[in-house]
Amino acid sequence: MDVSPLDIDPLLDAIAARTASPGIGSAAALVGAIGAAVCAKTARFALDEGAAAQAEHLRGRLTKLAHEDADAFQRALLDLDEPREPDPDRRDWQLGQSLAAAAEVPLRIAETCVDVAALAADLAERGKAELQPDAAGAAVLAEAAARVCAHLVGVNLGATATDERVRRAESYAAAAGEAVARTGA
Image (cartoon, rainbow, N blue to C red; front, side, top):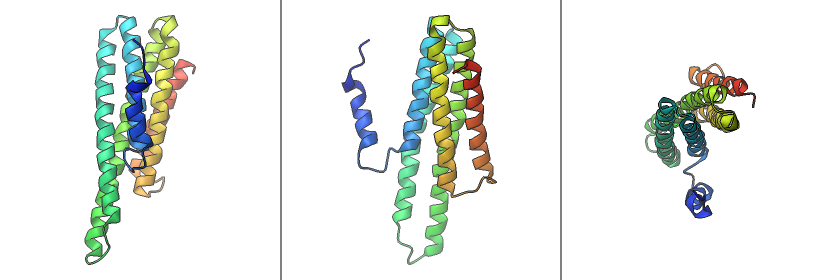
């Protein structure tokens, strides 16, 4: 299949537009989804339909999370723009809720990317030799997405390294890195 620039240009245009959303969280989810798609291809060439189905499930989950991230980020931005008066306590509470939600989605993206990286590492270890570089590359994509999301969790929460959600996000990024190390990439 020919990959025409027209196939991807609308997505890239949406990401590059001078709008707040979609942002890097959505882009990271899509990078993870691309890694999952490469896993599906690698699994199909290895005649491993179970791994292919798992990869397709992960791809669908990440695609959905890309949309959820854009929505959560947009809601947080709207709450940031809300005036502090006449009820600053209500506004601050709503903003805290929105930012926590905006951090939750990247946390789920990072967690899902660990699954993609682990699947990719398994495929690289037992797949066809000519497809091992593809599987290793899919693991690297998933790790990169997990690392981006770990950073976003901390930024969205304005949190310290002692925050449990930040620690979880960082552990997801580290686990994805361990999967990449298994591939030799």
